[in-house]
Image 1 (cartoon, helix red, strand yellow):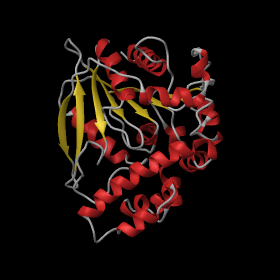
Image 2 (cartoon, rainbow, N blue to C red):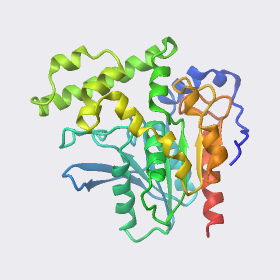
Image 3 (cartoon, rainbow, N blue to C red):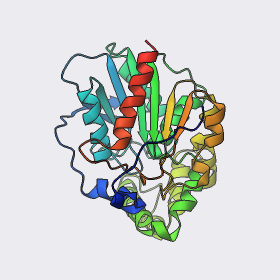
Length: 324
């Protein structure tokens, strides 16, 4: 499909990428969501925790939402989409990827940007409830990459899945890594490193024979963490092999359901290769919207509903209606 034009024009201060990115994480408060946690047992002996929230009336529609790097189901961007969708007759399943629900998972491996098999397990688990005739998917950042990879890598997609939205997606992982390494993103990068190393120290206490404290301490960049842990724990040769195999950009041409990618032009985490204009032009199911502003998972809009949330609802409802 052609590249979509965007109507998003935020208040002046939120045209700054860093303000747009930081404000929702530090100051936004999404209230009124009641979550019910469900633990899903996986075939490999591990588990994933899902946080459900329900619409006030009976519905046959549900959305499965996947968070970003070091996120969880309680992040404000996750709660914001749940609140809006619940008000519009959608149940929501907010996914906590492995090791992101507040409890160390059982296996040495955890989550990464390519764990589409885990998303497939969640989709099938939701389908087994025999309640929903319409499923949609939404992913933020790393979760958006997982969602796009799941849709495009060749598995049979259940016919109940009608549409998907991916927000602020690093669909070329190495290109995004290079962008995050730039001085403008130093604070963000250091925050990611601190959080990831804290998780690794937790894993080291449980699996002392697989990783050492000294190796963790020596890591000073994201690629060093991915070389030390992410690639090794998940069966890749090294970090570059992990980025190459898991980047969703290579799978976009084979997505067969209506899918919207919403990537702000001023997203400081995304390099040029994270804006797949050629793929969108060639695939009639792929829609790419590049607002001038928005930052990374920002998209502030006055009022309770942010632009990406309203745009997600609009896109999903359009294609659910068309597919009836």
